[in-house]
Length: 488
Image (tube, rainbow, N blue to C red):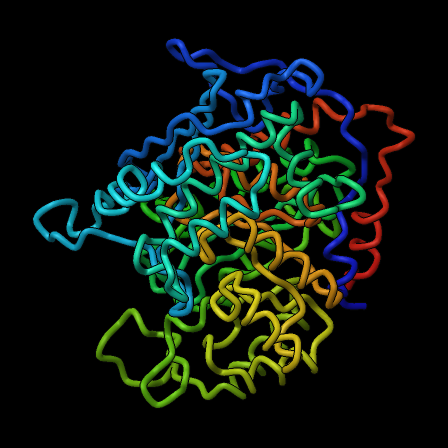
């Protein structure tokens, strides 16, 4: 039986976090609050801790070596809340605007000093004195100041940097961990740890090989805890490296933007075979399933077809498929491999092809470029029955409030929700708390090799270690359900 979206959206266990982690670090005279840091209890927190004293932005470098925005928010009691904004390589045309400077002589035009200026000179003065516990009010004020439908005036990267820091400060002011604050903002009833998806083979815009489809993932559905899932992912990753080295040579072990291996193969089926071999050799057959991010908008032709050899131009057109034929290829993959999730199988405007595939397969069909975490496009997709899961990326929409609304709307429609990183990441681990606080049940945090991206996986392990450890309360229900539902 194929995996159903409702089952995929459930985590492998559920627990109610009861402990706060100790303060992680001190920086200069400011107390730095991160996701797991426990602020003073509400009973002793001063009113000053609720108010913005200063907001300061700067330009930093992300995991791809490109500039991005980092924001410090300081409250009246001297606490500092720091956030950094991720950036994508394969981006949907309907995403909120990421403001870049455009000066080709500096960082190839990718500088973000204008976004930094918009924070320091336009947003910061208007936010001083405001109560950080009021996330919706903060985000609404910034949207009003911007006044554009896609945040093109201030830049979504500017607005999001502030929104993330406000959310952290709100948790600090209330004396609760960040995930608990997000739970309260979203009125989520029960906190859960998510099923992780690890990107282990890269193609598409994330790698210099010939693979058209962008990401091949593993989902350790047979794990009994997040820690075990992390172990399973790591073991398969290293075994996969050995298989690729033996088959294609040492240079085939090069990695893409997200840390997945990028062997120089063109046949997408061959990538799936590599995963099956690694899973079997690791001893996890039946316990680890496969997911794919096709990112099909990246290889749509002017004629409305799909070129699986798009990286080689010009080419003979032998690998150009009509949407219907591409859909048939997906069905073959689902038949032949333990695939439980396919993301962006068609172009972001090819609505009819999305609906056709969604109605004919029993797996999770995830909207990324299609939805861009935008509540308006989610409504359209629900009406057209185009997909049954949301890939939630906070920088696609630009505020915490809108991200939460996107998740709530998706859940109300019976969809799954997978909180996701971007290929240009930082040491910021906000998405770990977001995934837990929203009880999304799924999180996508790239490969374990990446210098920055594992921060969220590591932080999730930390959150797990500080939750209720009573094993009788750790229901292994969802992983077990996924395993039985998706058995071949």
